[in-house]
Amino acid sequence: MFRGCGERGKRKRLKISRPIGLGGSIPFIPTIFFCLALLCGSTSADPGPLGLDWTQEYKSPFEIEGFKYWYGDVGWGKIFYLSTEDILGLEAEAHLHFHSKKIYEIVLILGPGGLNNSNCFKKYSNILKYLNEKYGHYLFKNTEKDPLAEDLFYTSACIPVLMGLRIIDTIWKSGDMKITASLYGDEDGYYIEIEYIDLNLKIDADVNNKKKVLKKL
Image (tube, rainbow, N blue to C red; front, side, top):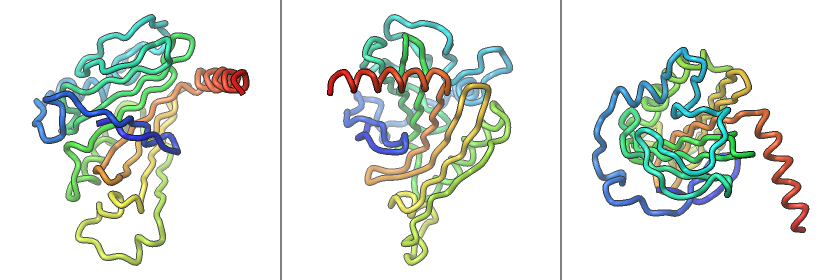
């Protein structure tokens, strides 16, 4: 389900219940072709996530293969989708952000369904493998670890992630796009979040948003 907003580009989910049939307790239909198309892509001129054209101007919500429109609008600047098919055994949601009717950011959130104490690192490594195949080897990986994590005993290496004591970010750069894949957790479970940002459009979007705020204050 969508969760509450937060910092660092993560926890952007909103508190909304999933429609019946899309919960973590409901088994998803494996679709290997969909998974490969989404994460692996092709060598075409448009290898963007979700198979979307980032150069196109959109006027209204549109269909995305493997996802169902939930709410939002291009004019509002945000559209949210829920998965109807699993991605490598994980439930998913997609958040699309727009500026001047063009997509400048996509946040793909995998989990919590399909992630647990025994497989969080394995699933994360599998996602990294697909992203490496599509965008080349990542530039760097960063781990934020709370010192408290060293003082506690765990039955699973994933537990510090669930407790928020460990967050892993892996970063790629592909043309004007920055990709960040993060593994983290909260009281509801584990998540793998993949954030795709068009750096040029984001600068324009940030400037525009600042002007709107200043106008209101």
